[in-house]
Image (tube, rainbow, N blue to C red; front, side, top):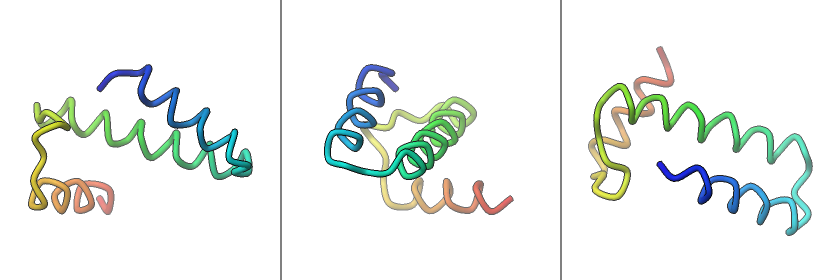
Length: 61
């Protein structure tokens, strides 16, 4: 996943007035998502709903 896109999104949240805790929460969630993508070998641009459900199952563990 391109880090630039993540950084741009987090900067957008800050510019829109999101609290630092909210931005940090999104950063942690996006990090977890990137870890999961790396472990599964999936491409985020081709994810289907079933794969997203697997991500949430992975988070619960």
